[in-house]
View 1 (cartoon, helix red, strand yellow):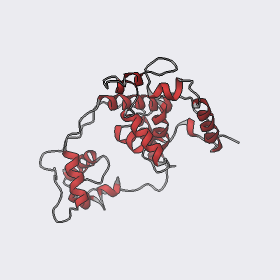
View 2: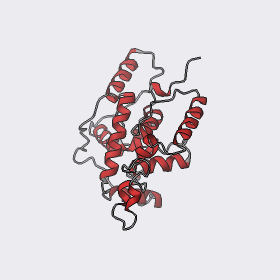
View 3: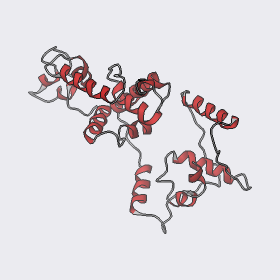
Length: 245
């Protein structure tokens, strides 16, 4: 954050904060600092063992544990720097800026899955990740591409199962599980159906997971993405603590 507001401030403003996370929040902080009309200095703490840093860390952890309903991010009039500087802009910067300003259509299925994942992450770690944090967590470099694709499709409910087939003539029967005669959903396929192979795969997955020294978590469909969110974004869930020798 300090770099974004100091050494990288000029380049961030030239690119309209296209490469910065929490861009609107950083814009607001920058405008508030500039509105002070005097020189601002930042000092990086040498260690976390002094009282001011302990209090700051406690406040930060408290903020993570609270559900944020509204954050005031309006920029004071006269201090808004908008647009990409033509002299320094690149094709990547222009593309990201244009894309960011285009309204993103909301998909109800995806919104529901994001909220389910957020709720599961709260149950695991008492933290409520944002949509951006959820998407970034399931694209983490530690996750293989096939797993990333799987999680992405699960969050978007993009797999062609269940209700997808109901309006396709001559294929309506694909919507029903042939073993249980219930709607074929991803949750049913992964956790409920006793079709041959499912239990074997989960046993192998548990064996592989425990070889890494991690405790096998309780399986719940909402936890699939939440596990990665907690590990890669929140980072302090007991589920991912190494087993004690």
